[in-house]
Image 1 (cartoon, chains in turn purple, green):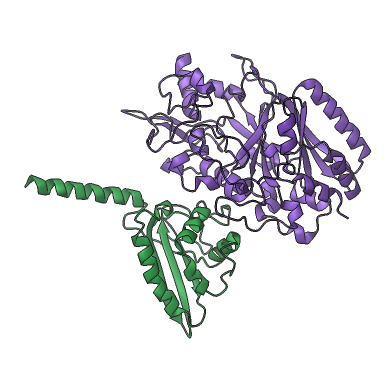
Image 2 (tube, rainbow over the protein chains, first blue to last red):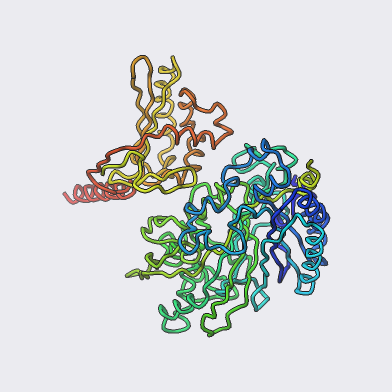
Length: 438
Length: 173
């Protein structure tokens, strides 16, 4: 039985937000930190509350902390030591293994995210811009009342038009493949697999291997909590469009190249089910757009290339222990859209997303280190994820094709990591506990 | 291929520690640890158990992309040591959890309980288990492969092709 009254809503609910803001804060003193957490206590919605009010609510708030943020709040050293090693180290220390090198290196990150002073994040999702501005001005007032809390940086979120479906700045439909937590009442879409044990995502519940082990202590702090890996990924839309133009003579050919990189047409239609041409109706149909496998339906990648983004991020029946590698994704786009046909304008735009999982090392870091950045994944030899892998212009992308495959060399980087961090997402009781530590 | 003392040419951190390089003899590890006094018979008997387990699972270890596993016992003075050597096609840092899950599932790691310093709570403490393995890994200083860099999959395919070809020739007679 999930403790829906205690679990922060972001774990279970995708809210109908079109805008929002992330606020990154640093705690200068404990009193300020506690005052800030206390004030936010009644703003943070549980999964149960959001479930019952999602149709009428206008804003949704989530709060999470870095390891040093927990220390700043007064969590004692004994308790801090019980957190997993990768969380204690933080994303900056794990950069080389995650592939955050070159321009992606934490030295180049923005917004103070690479700083050890990053202590907490308040995530605001809002239904519209008016509500967002109202919430932000409230947060400004709160910060003014908490001199011990400093705003390190903010990131404005904006959905990109058209607003009838979620998509990124490249135009790819998003939110098509999401694991379902057992006991949440959600029904997985066809092809998405059975619901997974809650312990894969929420602390304090059995996971796919049995009872969870080594939970952070005390129990009140970890129960109903989770971990967030935050990634701010700039999308180089101009570079992406130039690449498509370079590799496709007609609009149709360019769409196919875009589809091969992703594994889905920009409409969302998967290449396994629509190998030759786009099928927007299929892309929009949640009952059909995820209903495929690889082993029987596309073993050699003639439809969806072995190195395509979708195939790497969810190898389905071609990887072992998949149920121990799944992740919940939440997030939004930021920055203004680049008008169709417009040249690159140098303005930063991209995706600012959270990967939510019970084990950063087993789930997020594995995906980043192996699925995304292992050059020899699926024995591809010299490739990384074409959309979010670490690309330095020396790697390739192979499109299996009969009689002869197509090999694109010198793949450019379509994305750059501009920031990231590991956060602990406490349950509501834990949040209250944190606000009362002496 | 001669390998520096550290076991790698350039330090590259994986999720659980340094990544060891691929050589003409593929990837691998060599774990050496002292056994608890009086446990030699238990460990040797364990060989029969594993043999039976694996015999019933022809594809059970496929995930590890193995070439060979070798379990060896040897004496130094009055002490007995255990050496466990694996040769395979994947860098073991990347698939650590898959290996631990598999070994736990088939009881392949219970022999480790007879080694000194092995964490008693290994069943519920995967990080401690991984730490023990990492701390007892002794990197090679030299590796050679008569068929360099060939993967187990390539070898299996070649053998299958050879068998089919021989069968075809036999049938033609």
